[in-house]
Every structure is written in structure tokens, then in C-alpha cells.
Image (cartoon, rainbow, N blue to C red):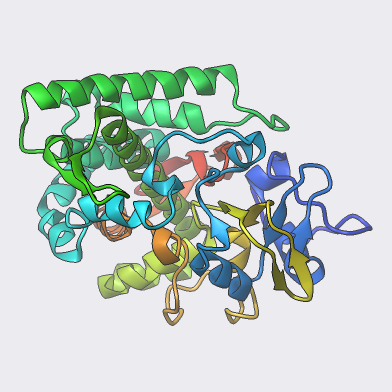
Length: 407
């Protein structure tokens, strides 16, 4: 069983290793020590700094001029010193603002609201295929397949290729315990994913359709010199990789987390069963309690002081969202899962200029997924011994959640 028990901690200062099994499986006791003992943490082993308190993480996330995204968003990228591939998530203003404007209308609240019938149809279809089964894997059979189906429809990916997207994303995000560089399989998957999308983009230029990739092919952006030009195929491929991977991974982890949390907290599940109007707040609490994105990587462009400690310029920084959302300085009784918690400033989907572009879509997908699950299976149980967590760079959640329904 994966627990968050109050086990005795080792003597000495806390040591945070984002390549360790502790990070992959249960970092929360360590996060507590970081917040209390080393809120501005420096890793001698890997040469990075980390902020863990809510107030500090929020402040740093807002300060893009000090904490740049252009050097990468995970520790492997930040430590490499190499220029990352072109992607909106690894840009600062003004380039980031110009690129974000291209797709922001697609993800506006109004546009997302119009997608609800499609989202509900996809989720319902996946669940309907499970109605004759008494047990299955809530990740492999449900939370994994439907999010990538939704984002793939939006992008215009052919139906026969949609689940390949999920497996590519899983593979290139995977990290072996202790591995500080990308593995060969991760690099192969990244290349295959990029090659597939690049070829698809070239097809969309020749034969456009009513989808996001086709619209990006005809979009124009104002460059730094003021000249307005179309996006090239590499830029569109970067957009597509970001949207496809984020759209698949985040919701998969959030929904699987929900199923485990509700199984472990039956009183909170009963609240949702009796009043589905609690679902939006429940999604926010799941996102706070177990955020799928555990940290955001940045690079310091100038020195800044937190808690009487100065972080120098030219340093990799990890903003520990997973620690910040359990900070007792910001949340009462933070280690309690409570769907009636009053809403506050949510940072589970990022904050500041890099707030997740698809946050509204992810929230809607998660709300509908829990609602449709509750309608079919108000009673279910998880196999605690069969739970498996992913081992990924900065994405956390379950790779397997065995469930028995109708029990």
C-alpha cells in the first residue's frame, strides 16, 4: 500500500533528490521537512535550488523576468546547458505572449464550454465499454485512454493513431530511479513522436481540415522585428507535442488520483454522490492534494532573496508545487483531503504567464469523468497492493489502479 505515514525521518538536514524513489512514490513527508527546515534548498549533489513554501513558489512563478523558462522545464534540461527545442512552455515574453495568443481562443472558457458534449460522449463511451466487467485497471482502461482521445480529436490526429500519442508521451517522460539523463528509449520515443507530428503537419498544409493543426498552419505571428509571418512546421510540431502530451498526461493522473483518494476517503466520496454540485470543488481539492505536476523548472537570471537566503543568478530552480499545496502556512489542515475546502488561489495547473493553457479543459474533463463514474459505480474498491506509481520527470500519479466495481 502506498501511504503517507509519519515515518521517522533520518537525522541531519533534508536531502531532496528528484531522481529518487522517494520523489516518485511519496515525497510529502520530505516536502514538510523542506518547508520547515530548508525552504530555500540547495542541492550539493545536483547543483539546483528549490523553493517549497506556498508564498515563495507563487512569488517566483509570477516573476518571469527573474526566473526564466527558456533553459528548460525539468532538471535534466536545466542541467544540460543546451538550448531546448522550440516550445511555448520554454519561452518568456514577448515571444511567449505572441505564441500563446495563437491558441488562447481555442482554450477560452466559452470555447471549452462548447466542447462539453463531445467530452461527455468520449468519456461515456469509454466507460460503457467497461459496464460488463467487475474489475479492471482504472488507468489502463479508463483514465489513460479518454484524455488523449479528446485532445487528439481537437488537434486532428487520425483515430487509429490517437492512443500511440499516449504511449509516446508516457515513454519520453519516464525516468529510471537514479537516472539523471534521458534514457535511450525516452529519446527514441521523443523522436518518433516529433517525427509523426511533423509529417502530420505537412499533410495538413496540403489537405487542411476543421481541426487545430490545420488552423495553426494558416495562423500568423508577429516576430520580434515586427514582421508578421506564418508559423513554420517545426514551430507547429512543438505546439502539437506540448498540447498532446499535456492534454494526455495531466488529466490521466488527476482522474486516477481521484479514484484512489475517494476510495480511501469514503466520507468525501459520499459528499460527491449526494451533491454533484460539489464536483468542481472536489476537482480543485484533488489538484491541491496530489498535483500531477510536482515542480516547474526555471533558471535564475538575477539574484533574489527568500527567507534570508539569496539565490544567485545563473542557477537551476525547482518551484515545488507539490510541496506548496500542502503548506500549512497557506492551508488549514493541509494533509487532510476535504472536498468542502474553501477555494483559494489554485496553482496546481501552474500560475502566472505559464498557467496551463488547457486548465479549463482539464478541469471539465475531470469533473465529467468523476460524475460519470459515480453515476455508474457509486460503490467500488481499489486493490491497494496493486497500485503502481509512475516514475516521471515532474509528473506524478498512478500507472495502475486495479478496481472492483459494484462491490
